[in-house]
Image 1 (cartoon, rainbow, N blue to C red):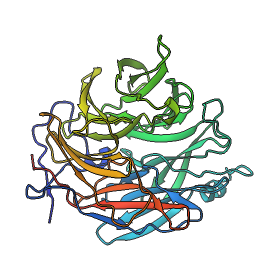
Image 2 (cartoon, rainbow, N blue to C red):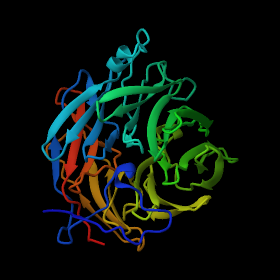
Image 3 (cartoon, one colour):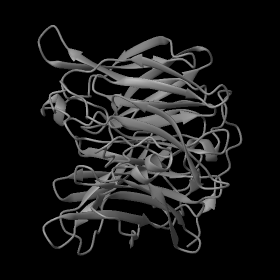
Image 4 (cartoon, one colour):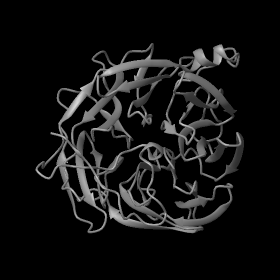
Length: 408
């Protein structure tokens, strides 16, 4: 079955997001497929102490898929891997600690166990991502990880890493568009902007309560960033709003997010989980509890942000992954409820949705984390961990075949 490339003619004046810069593809799904997509596990190369892929996925201009494999124990190192879907080849592109050592930047005893961020292509053709550590951090938000984080880019011509910045905060997420690349640090949602043209680094503190940190944030085709700000309401409950920053890192708007926090504590809430583009330049995201939101950029004015209802047709669900299905208003994604994972197809325009259970085969203790990555054949990638059969976890990559959903 071959997926077809969707036409993106007639997109709005905000501009069609580049497939390279948006990190996804706008490919139709075949009309004769119903139910859940075919699932195939890919064999991830092993690294010392590797245990998970925390949503660290991306794609480059050649259609190669990138993964950040994280480690578990203090003092260990995350690794970056490149996967060629056409031939099924993996390439180890290096570990964080090895790169710090090579550059003379590693501090005595330093660990960098996570590449948690998305792996994002800038308009210079290079890949941007972040590493971080967890040693010494306090879950109530009173202390950051001892070794903080690092912002990196890799040159695809040479596969050499370049160190861009070291931060006091752990860096949990990276996003960007064009020359404006952003990284989100914790605690207190500290936003960094790296300008690839001027090689400048700006910083703004967005604000967040206690041990809460959003796993993702969004950036539109204007280079505007959207980051949750969380606080205690007058009633003493946790509240959130989505703050918009322009390309000069000035706050220009904020919208209340009524369906951001659920019944769990703020520290247990993952904030923005799933995110994706539509071909006309709008962005979509889900919160930890599964509410779907739309961001509609409007020229130089602040964007319009609105809630679209629950992503899953049965209501509240953890929803970590979203993918565009064609150039229209249909999206697909994964939800989790207990040990059950569903493939959900939803039309943003009509609000109609369907859900079908994903078959994870003989995998045990599965966790599927956030992704928006699709390859040039239309296949999507889910990442996380599964039981290693010996009481621990191992990194997991699931490749979904042509994605079910009627063509636009």
